[in-house]
Image (tube, rainbow, N blue to C red; front, side, top):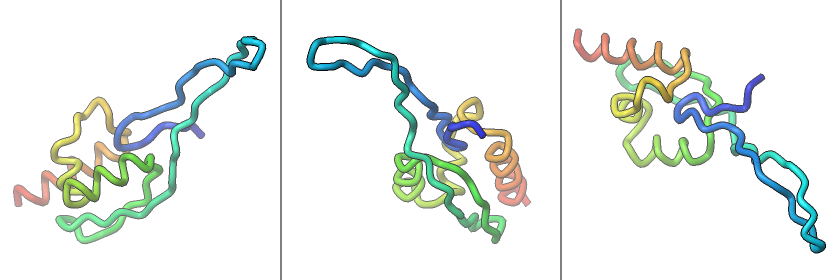
Length: 94
């Protein structure tokens, strides 16, 4: 199970733990991923996605899943989110 946001592509970053004696050891900064169910207005159904908290705020700010995916870059989206985006575009065209 990869720790990557399905909407923004945000993944783990690496850095150092630094002790009081300035010893450095490697560590990972993991994104704050949540399992959420988002509803598409155009398709009239819900989708379960694993997204970061920042992405969830962005979805709310842009006015829902449909508006977020319309502006999102294809290279940032997962395969599941890309299929949802294409289905929404197809439903909007019809």
